[in-house]
Image (tube, rainbow, N blue to C red; front, side, top):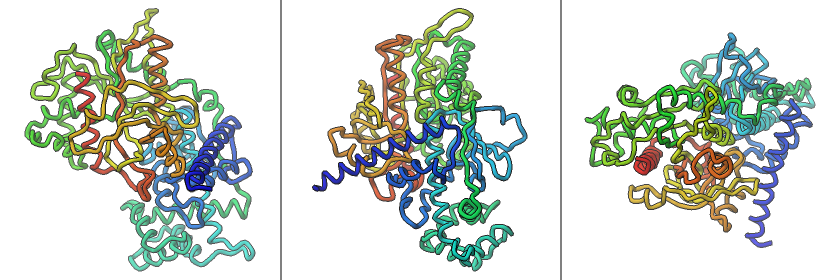
Length: 556
C-alpha cells in the first residue's frame, strides 16, 4: 500500500471514529444516563482511543497525558474529579439556591456542587456543549484508570508505596517544604509515567497561593474514584435531566436572548435603523471606535496597533475603564446576558460616536447601528443568529430588522502557518455532513496584507468539536482538493442561519453582505502546536484589531 493510500485509510478511519462518537453521544443523551467506564460507555471510549485526538496527546498510551489534562481541567468545574455523579441539566433554578456557582476557568458555564459526590452542570448552549463536556469527561476517566492500574495491585489487594505517600499528603492537606515537594513529584513521576521535569511543570501550573497541592489532589481523586470502580464496583454515572432532553435543540435560550436585544433596540428607538451584526469579542470593536479618543496620549500614529497592545495587557485596567466610560457616554449600550446563552452584547449607535481623528472620519454613509455579539459555541451560533434575524413581534405588529451585513471574526485552528496568522474563508465545509456553504466574502486577502501578518485564503471546515480532531483527518482536508486552510466550530452554523433568513424565510434582504476572518489560535498539524500547548498571549492582538478595523472600515 502506498503512503498516500495509508494516509487516506487513516483519515477514513478517523472520520468513521468521529461519526461513531457523535452517534454514541446522541444515543446516551436520549437514554438519559450512562456509566462512562461501564458497558454503556464502551463505544465512546473505544472510538476516542481509536481516534487519538491531537489535543488529548498520549491518550492511547500507558503514560498519563499531562497537557491534555491541563486543557480539560480548565474547561470543567473545579472538584469534578471528586464526583461520582455528573448531572447535566437545563437552567432549572439552581442559581436561586444556596449552592455555590462554580464557573470553569476557560468555559462560561454554570456548575453547582450538590454534595460530596455530585456535580450539576447547566447546559444552555446546545448540543455542542454536551459533546464538549462528554469528550472531556471520557478523557478524564480514561486517564484516571491509567493511574489506578499503576497503583493498585489486584492480586494482593494492596497499593504501591508511592500511592500511600500521596494519599497521606492529600488527605492530611500537608504543607510541603521543598524537599518533601520534590519527593512527592518523584513519586508522581513513577505513577504517571512522566519525567520529573514534566510532572514538576504540571505541579507548578496548578499551584496557587490558596491551594498549593491542587495537582496532587487532582491526581489522587482521579485514581481514587477509579480504584473504587475496580474494587467496589462503584461506577461513575453521567445523567441528563428530563427538562434538558425536552429543551435541547428548541432555541429556548436563543429566543430569549434575541428578544432582549430587540427590546433594547425598540426602547432606544433604533429598530428601524440600518443594522450591522458583528460576532467578535467584547473589547475589539469598542476599542477601535473609542480608544484613540479616550486615551489620546497613548495613541502613536507611527504604530497604529500599539494602543491596542497596551489595552490588552493585564495591567491596563485603568485605561480600559476610561474607554468604557467614554463609550457609555457616546452611544454604546451594554446588554449583559441573562438568558443563559452566556453571550453578552454591545449595541452601538454610531450617530453618537465622534469619528474625528479616526480611520472612519470620512464616512459618508448613513450612521448605522452595530450589534456586537460575543462568541457563540458550536451549534449555538445557528440558534442565536437564526433567532436574531427573525422579525420583532410586539403588540400584534411585526417589525423586520434592516440588517445590512453580518461579520464574523473569531479564533480558529490553522493548517498552514502559526499562532496569530489570519485566515480568510471562501467557503465553510461542515464536517460529517454534505452541507457546504459557499459565499461572497467581502473581506479579501488583499485587504489584510501588508501589515506584517501572514494571510491565507481558502475553504475552512466547521468541525463538530475541536477536541476531536486528529492529524490524519486534518492532513487529508489540507492535502486533498478541498484545500482546507483551517478549522473552527461556528462558521457553517452562522452561514446556515443567514442563508435561511435571506433566501428561504426572506426576513432579511437577499443582498445581505457577509464578512468572515479568523486569527489562528493553534496549528493542530504541528507537534506541540495544539490548543493544549497554551494560549495566544499577545501574538493575536495585531490580527484581532487588524480584522476588526477592516470590518469597521467597510461598514462605515
